[in-house]
Every structure is written in structure tokens, then in C-alpha cells.
Length: 247
Ligand code: CA
Image 1: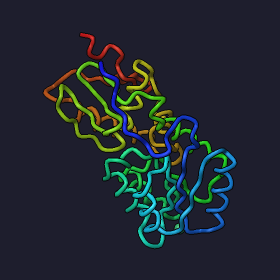
Image 2 (image 1 turned 60 degrees about the vertical axis):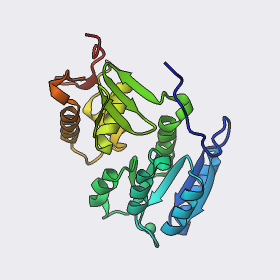
Image 3 (image 1 turned 135 degrees about the horizontal axis):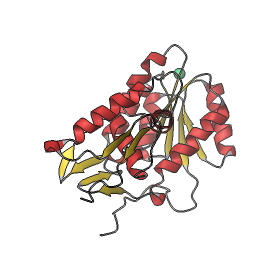
Image 4 (image 1 turned 120 degrees about the vertical axis):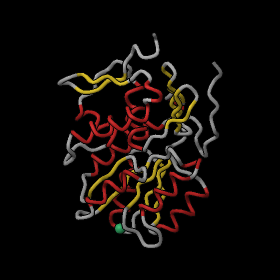
């Protein structure tokens, strides 16, 4: 198999500091985030307006964006939607911030493709942990671009899933769920673990949400009654079947 092709990334050389764009119009919070992120060794740029953020993102994509929901100019939700629509920023990690009371919007945030979602006021160490986790997950030099099992292929760079060469259309959550399960074939994950890792938060969300998304994923993967790659382990959770595609 050929070495997967990789796009050049701005400032992405080995050893370069990961670049983080903070988009937050509350200047105290922007300062606090910048201070803490720089202390952790990141190169940070901070902007206050949504339209300003868009300009920055077109100039050069950072390695991660911390994006406030309510912004002057263009809303965080709209920025996230546009990031996901552009090829070069499709997989750019995004953490959305929201004020209390906007929590009902969480589902919308995740449906436009935010990777994580944090409600203000949040603990700074917790946010830093999420930044680290997301960057670790997103670092292309540390992970294979393509995950392949049997007739199933998942491409992290193009965010495409194919089965026997045919496109499988998945929502962002189903994509991340499949990606996560495929990374560790055979390993059984509890619903709470999947909520933590795939949704990025565990509180307040019903564990049955996982079942709903697994159901959608299965339905999307079941082309022409093909073998189901996902195993339900009663009383435990879900796994990607390690024997899948081996006949
Ligand atoms: Ca705001």
C-alpha cells in the first residue's frame, strides 16, 4: 500500500508549537485563556469578532480553535458551519464555548461539527485537558490517515467513509463514533466512555443517546444487508468487531 498523501500544513513542521486561535469577545476571558494556553506551550492568537476570525482562518488555519458561541460579526455557530464546509478546515478541531442558558443549543453546535462543547463558567484546567486531548486526536503525524477493515474504509482527512468503494453518508457524530471504534478493534467501550471520548462531555447527556447514534451508524453501514461491523456487548457497551472482514 502506498504511503497516504498528506497536505502541507502551515507551520506544521515537527517541533513547531501548535497554534490555537481564541475567538472570544469577553476580553477578560480571552486574556485568561491566552495566558494559560501560552503557559502550556501553545502559540496563541486571540480575536474578538466573528468576522475577524473568519479572515484569520482563511489566511492560515491554526491547529485548533476555541470558539465562543455569541460573537459580534458572525456567530460561532456559523463560523463552525463554514469551517466544516471548507476542505482545508473540515477536520480542524473546534471547541465551542457557551454561556449558561444557551445549553439547549448544544445539540445544534455538535450537529454543525464542533468537536467539543464547554459551558461557561468552566474550569481552566478542564479546558486545557480537552485542548490536549483534541490535539492528540487530531495530530496527523501520529495517526494513520486511513482506517481500513474488510470492505470498510474511513479517511480522516477527507472525512469520507466507503464500503466496497461506495460512499457511506454519515453525520459528524456517527463519523467520530465509527472512527473511535475502528481505532481499537475488539475493544469494548461502555456508553459512558463513548460519551466522554466521542461527544467530549459526559454530564447531562443520556446514555441512550449512544444507542441512537449507533443505530444510525449501523443503518448507514448496512448496504445490501452486508455484515454488521459493530458488536453489541450486552451489559457492557459496543465494539468494532475485530473479526470483521476476515471471512
Ligand atoms: Ca460572547
